[in-house]
Length: 189
Image (cartoon, rainbow, N blue to C red; front, side):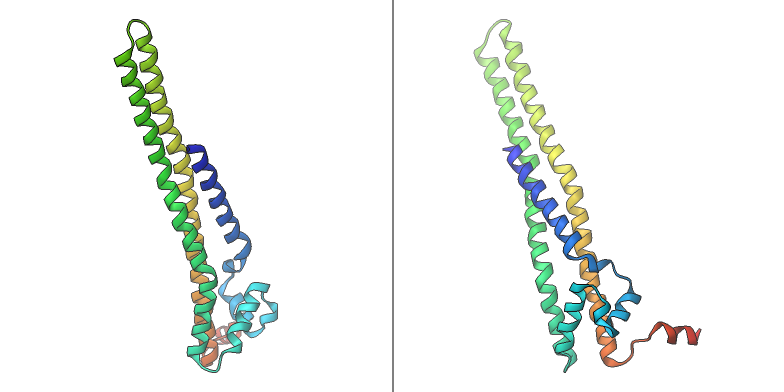
C-alpha cells in the first residue's frame, strides 16, 4: 500500500512540477520585458503573446479586459489548485498508512506473545516490532520529501498568479495611457 501511495504521489508531484516549469516559463519575466511586450506583443514568448492578443481583442472597456484576464487565470490556476489539493491528500495519507503498519506490527507482537512459548517468543516480538518501525519510517520517508516538493509547487503557483496580476495591472495602465516607458523615467531623473 505504501508503494502504491509513493508511486502515485511522486508521479503526480513531478508531473505538476514539470507542467509549471514547461508550460508557464513566461512567469519568470521582468517588469521591463512585460512593458515592452505590451507595446510589441510579437516580441513576447508564444504564451504571453497569445494572452496579450486575447486581452487586446476585448479592450473596448476596462471591465472587458479584466474579464478576459479572469478567463486566462481560470485556464491555469484551478488546474494547479486541484493538483495541489490531491497531492496534499496523498502526502497526509503516507504517514497514516505507515501508522497502520505500526498497528499491524504491534498486533503481530501481541499475537506472538500470547501464542508462543519458550525461545520462539523473542522471534515473534522482534518481528512485530521490526514491522511496526519499518512501516512508520517508510511512511515518513515518503511524505517528508513530497511535502517539500509540494511547497515548491505552491510557491511556483503563487509566482504564476503574481505574473497574471502584474500583467493585468500593466495592461490596465497601458489602456488608461499612464504607463511610463524606461526613456521617460530616465529623462525625469
